Length: 304
Image 1 (spheres, one colour):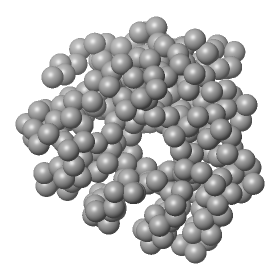
Image 2 (cartoon, rainbow, N blue to C red):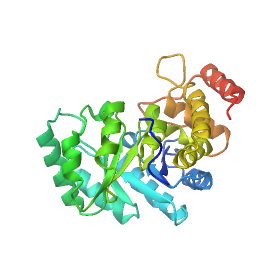
Image 3 (cartoon, one colour):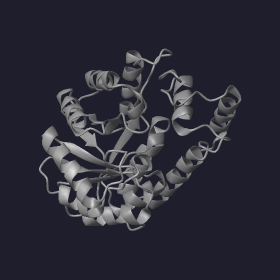
Image 4 (cartoon, rainbow, N blue to C red):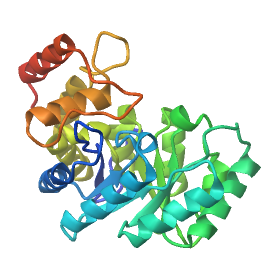
């Protein structure tokens, strides 16, 4: 996926972390600070309550409060997408309807995460969910979390539904990412957003409609430059920016040596006064020595 970008523009949609107080409740003032910060840094939209936003780890009331608060403080041009979660069809549909009533651009829907599902079962679940929500939805493919990947044939079938606007695909499969972009290249009514970090530059150059980078919370300006330079055909700037992004993302991990992405990003945002470091269970805050190493490494980066 290294051909020149086929689109003049693409969207930067940042999956925002969910600001929490020390007691674990929603931090309303931090929501405002963070929304305005990301909007000011060039985000076209925000995805609320996805993986980075700890959506499955906060209760339904908190999820809906976050959407309402974010919409109330967001600039009018900033599009908000929010996940509608649940393994029960009726519950997921009710949350999807509530998401739209609170002002989200679309409800973001995914497969249930318990039973392995074949293509027909996937199509049946998603079609019923879309019909129950009866409003704009964005498909969300994240097999690392739900343990099933939405089959391309199912995506193609659902793309014909009047309410389905597109897909955010976070599967770590470069062949699939390329296939999705090619499949919908000439479909102006169906948008493909790449959420798989390693493939974002290639996806933009191949003509993706946008990217959804989790690390956009801490370096939104770098991702804004990546999108703009890739879509302008400025290959040199895009690749230099990508190198800077890779330096940042290399500081995080799940190997016990580095701070995990969500925990580390909240800690860095806390240093900037944008939100507190609190994460929802089962995540826990990093040890002080690990955070100190992260801070030192981040401060020492030479990013272009």
